[in-house]
Image 1 (spheres, rainbow, N blue to C red):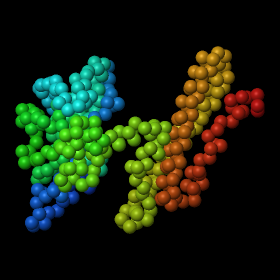
Image 2 (image 1 turned 180 degrees about the horizontal axis):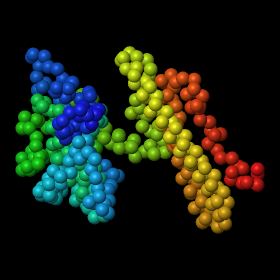
Image 3 (image 1 turned 180 degrees about the vertical axis):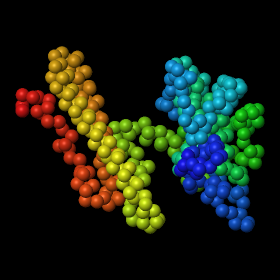
Length: 377
């Protein structure tokens, strides 16, 4: 709250106020300064959104729901729970069949899994830069239903959009979703969208080829006036990166890496950031080294107490599976330390720090035979 200016104020933050949005997308009063003859009706100030869901982010029903504590309900990217639940309770769940090709997102919109409180998560991001819109992320209960995405889109259309009259939305089933959007908004007391806002539907250039031929010329970004060159698939790209090997390989997120260099801080008159950044990097490096020591010790213990004691093939297979799991953790923290040290070098550390945080060698990640086989010592 301090970062967002609420640390020493008596008023409380509103919905989404504790989350940051894209600094490049048009936001009146933030990054737009109009001259006398300019208007927000100009195509230059068109807002572009991409909508999508992710069914990997499942959530089970909590055992003790009364113990669940919401630290910032509705103040970040996720919508406020009470109003959203009322919207779901009052909205009719209409089963709609696709008039286009047999799209799974339409026909499986009502597929429920009763053990799950949330079957996935969906939301809205800016279509060009992939920044999620504050207070526009929603939970799914039965798949990508229109009532879920309606709420997400209406919340996104209210975030710093005063005066903007044109928004382009990319959604993989927009040929079906956009048909009665305004009707659904008008019927609901929880959905709000200014009448002056024109929604121009689009379909990403990858998904559009799974539609009928008529959808290509109607919804492909190549034929939308004023949108420029954009594929409308950036949320798919983000999901693929997030679901790749980032758990075992932090380098998978290098595309989003922010490098703070000493010269850049001096040019921006922000030299006070250098010691703060260095302190954070030192803590990150210390944590990585600590975890490395723990996992290397665990690996040695596994060899001594599990692998060597395994007599049957089944026990050996299980033992080596545990060793592989620990080795993956070793590789992860070694990669974190290496990347952290690389960033520390950009900040021109002192001689003491250079002596303390040395390059990590492959030989240092191996455990001694004396630990696993005491008879060698």
